[in-house]
Length: 300
Image 1: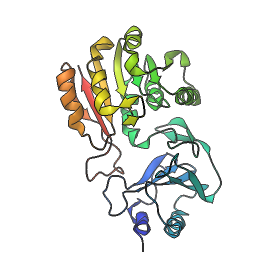
Image 2: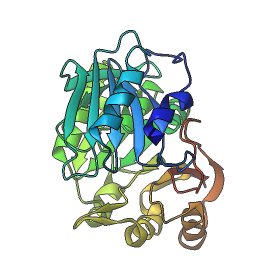
Image 3: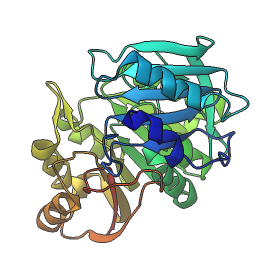
Image 4: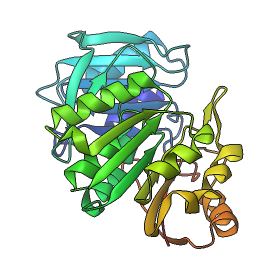
């Protein structure tokens, strides 16, 4: 009997809000013995198993057999091998579905499976996007490292006055435009800039000031971002493009860095901003070692 055989006992059944995209099992938080290499996501109508280390075909088949039938509208069970280069996909059951539109908090997002390591939306940031949707009314928003603009969609849905999305990937920004169109948003309120942030503080200043900053950088991106080195560069420049009475959502997804990395650096480099609260991830993202996503809110 393998550890994978126990996963089904850790999934809350029946699945609540089954029309919504959500994580069903999160082993990456080391809360379950011998399962830290496995996650399972429900991306209606696809069940996606992600492995961060190899498993035998027999163990994977047993898990697939257990998962069949837990969601009546599941049309496909897929497996991603994240431990391999480019994270290839296998179709374990049902249809080959690569493009889909999922729903979260009544908002729609476009996903792509099988093309790259990431599908287009990070589900662990659900509560962060909901906070933005609830607190963006009338605000001028700056979304750094915007990826496919999930925060931007939430901000416009929440009544933001305007938003500037900044990312180095034109492909990600293109998906961001599509996400806004899916939700029938007025794109005159939304700007998309393909920029290297660390070479573009002057551009940010000219587009500001902003009332709300969302900063969700990658932990490490070859030739562009080293979070430990580069996050402080943003912190010390905040006064150049943020309004006097503004708020910051600072995200950190580096396992080796705790929330104190953000709090300590902000106290030193941007002391006008006070730490207010942490926006926690959904309960399914159980963490035994405090190495998961940190989302901290600051206000000046």
